Amino acid sequence: STTGLFFGIFVVLLTIISLITYFIYKNSNEHISIIISEITELLLVIISMIISILIYIKYRTVKFSYKLTFKMDYNEMLCIVGLFGIYLFGFYSIIAILDKGVESNVEILSLSIQILSIVESTIQTVIIID
Image (cartoon, rainbow, N blue to C red):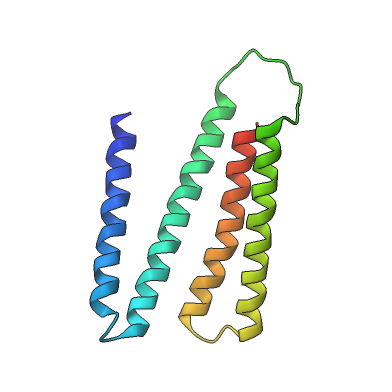
């Protein structure tokens, strides 16, 4: 439990430091500030996706004695509806990025963030529903 707390504090500090550097470069060099913001978001998505995968692997190795019945209750339906909204937002963002054209590092970062966000939200929904 202390490892998770330490890692959470580390992620909060990383986010605060990136926000400070974003606002430092915002007025002087806007391109660098946008890249800092995109890289921070990409790192946070990658970290949460890796943690979700590790949780899923650990959850699968634990032996539970429960019946293998699948019920679609209110919580599961809300997760699926939320996942549908994330899919819509992600796919429309990907279409907008590709329509504009992938010409710089910012577009590549934005495209990778949207793709990884869709994958991460799918993994998290599978963990919650399972």
